[in-house]
Every structure is written in structure tokens, then in C-alpha cells.
Length: 204
Image (cartoon, rainbow, N blue to C red; front, side, top):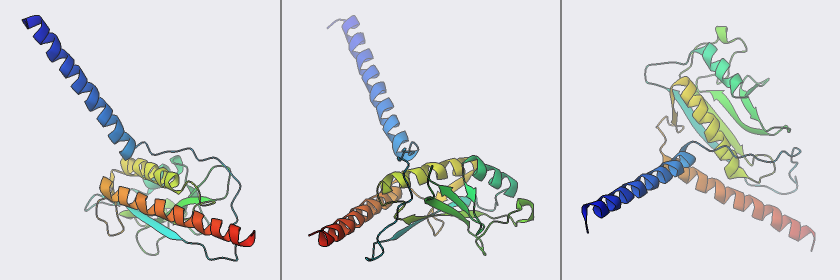
């Protein structure tokens, strides 16, 4: 094998290595950031009232860096830019497009866990709590709604220079988020099975 062939083989190996690295990076970005999934708009779902349906609460936190608090005016500005609705109970809600269903809510981590209507009159906070009450909407696409939550929280974290944490204010890692996702998948299976069992019971 001459020097020219050796050089070509070496270049080919480098190219394949770079391509593999780019593919791996793309997969990582998808798992970590690109979480927005378009969920078809639908009318607000009215679940049956004659049976007890499973419920589950997902809670995550956005915490300021140690020793810091969020600038209240900037916080409100970012919340509105991300599409949050300021609700009558003084929390922020993320409403699903073309419906009245709440995908998730943001509450103040400090008592009384609300946001003043006038940000200039509100005491600064160092944390936000994101609460997703499952089932969202009709109980379908629950993992996609969780991905939506993570996507919005990632934007919130970036804009506020904050950290994504659990309810105990411990930073969340990818494996923690994966475990939450698996729990949501199990919840959706259980929820769907409950509805199917009720349907077959009443129609047979």
C-alpha cells in the first residue's frame, strides 16, 4: 500500500468519524432540547364522571443561580413572550391552542405561591414551580405534552439564566427526565385501559 492510498484511507476514516459525531450530537440535541411536538387542536375533553380515572401530577422547578433572584419585570416579559396566560388565581397558565385545556401552570415557589398582577409591586422570587396535572386534555399524547413542557421550561431557563431542578431544587439530569417520561407513558397506558374497560363494560 503506497503513501497516497494510506492517506486516502486515513481521510475516509476521519470523515466517517466526523459524520458519526454529528449524528450523535443531533440525537443528543433532540433528546435535550427539540421537544416541541405539534398536538392536534381539539375541543375540550369531558371525561366520564361515573368512574374514577387515574391522575398524576408532574412538578418541576426553575431556580435562580445560588444567591440570586429573578428580575420581576424581566420574568413577566419572558412569560408573556413564551405565550403564558395570567390567570385570575394569579398564576401563569399555558393554554393549548384552540382549546380551553391547560397544558401546565407556573406558580411562585415562595408563599403565597402567586404572582402580583403588577410586577413592580411583587417581591422578587428565586424560583418557579411548573405543575402539569395529568391527564392533559383527553388523555392522549401525554408524553408529547411533557416534551412541550420541557421545551418551554428550557426557553424559560435560558432567558432567565436559571437551572431546571426537581421539587427539592436538585438539578435534573437527562436520566431523571427519562424516568419521568417512562412514568408518564405508564400513566397514559393505565388511563387508556381504564377508559377502554369502561367502554366495553357498558357496551357488552
